[in-house]
Image (tube, rainbow, N blue to C red; front, side):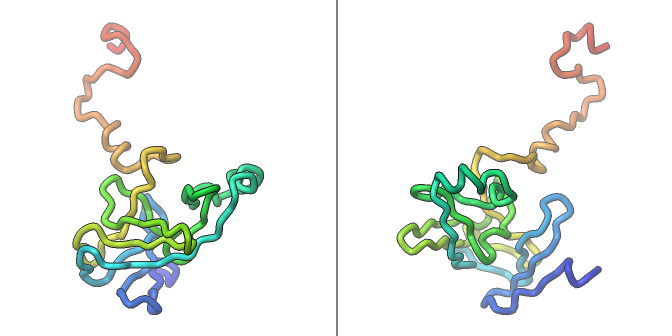
Length: 153
């Protein structure tokens, strides 16, 4: 395993690492138990007004990392852009609009080696692991989608 697969984040009070998940890509993992309601990160944001974002930002990779913000969009710096999505997140976030910060807090106890995930909401631009599981049929005789039973035989 290369050094790039696990990057210790020693500047944090919590024992966190950046790791590469085989499906989700890079994400934040804990080495230790973390109690519910623990502040994990305070991320400053870079603000883009709506016009700037519509002209430039939405056509770049930034579009995958920005948060809707009052009057535009914001890019979370630090770990804020490294939390992956989960339909059942273990970390929540609070936008602090006046101070241009996002605070990330655990929603439940988190076990060692577990990934810290937030919810990106309902308008995802990618397929989740849950979506992929729902598409796999256990019944090999299940009709093909959009076909009459006779056509699928």
